[in-house]
Image 1 (cartoon, one colour):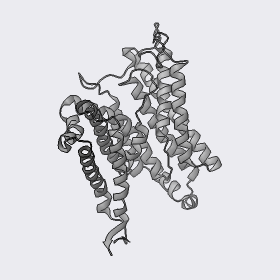
Image 2 (image 1 turned 120 degrees about the horizontal axis):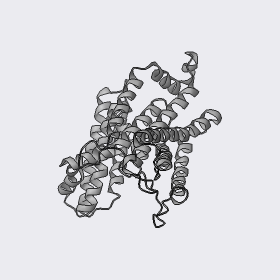
Image 3 (image 1 turned 90 degrees about the vertical axis):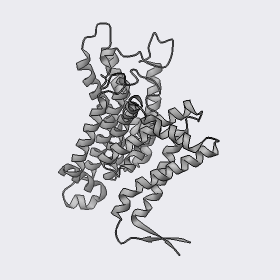
Image 4 (image 1 turned 135 degrees about the vertical axis):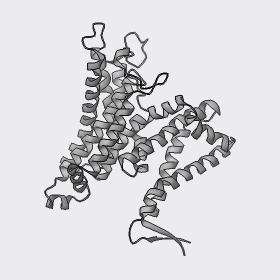
Length: 354
């Protein structure tokens, strides 16, 4: 029988090899799944994993999908390093999208009192503030009443989704939109400029990379980042050193909420160009997997976001080219998380036959 023997110290080798092994097992699982559905496993895997990277348009779409995943993933990595289990990045993204969309619509009138160069930064700021506000509710309940942040942040995600439906069918609905639940399409000057011609990749990708770089400095070089981690992991030790665990909770949640809200703002002013009830296909939840794939490090988060983006685009290709259901993306995401958690056992334990 299999016996797990605790290691004397955690294996640094498996700490980095675990995500690669999990990815390999996910691909193997996908081949078995495609075969059970009556598809050629090699052809299906090629469509799912290789076709999204076959040309510049596909690559640009992968990079586009990675923007909200990087932003939410960096914020969640900082939260989890501080032992703050925020599961509500999806809701914080949605609030950011609502606030940014409302800001753009307030100035997108025939008179256009402000130019896009002013409104776009304002909308981004509004999105950040909206995400921070939504995350602040969880932080306040955790700090004041010791409420479980997992449940609170998750439940607030559903409230945010219902709020988005309300504004799209009520105060922000397009009066000339034939009663469809959506706002009017933003004017061109209030949409983000593209980086590459004939693609939808906008400058938000550069902003996401900058956020990952700043996050790297924050967790590895900044003293305030060190205090945050100590305050989250060892409250008593933090108090002895003069650090505040309550401040750690607030800081981690507000950083994550701000980044998620920024991601929502970039989505509505980028590829979507309006407010709709389906602003996010689950970026905030997928970013949880991204954060763990990246070993809770912002640089690793970027790599994890790219892998997850390939899953999103590959799922669309598999649906249109070989007739697989759209849920195939979610299956791959769940399988990757399952295998990653299983492989992480090897970090602290050795497998022995007994």
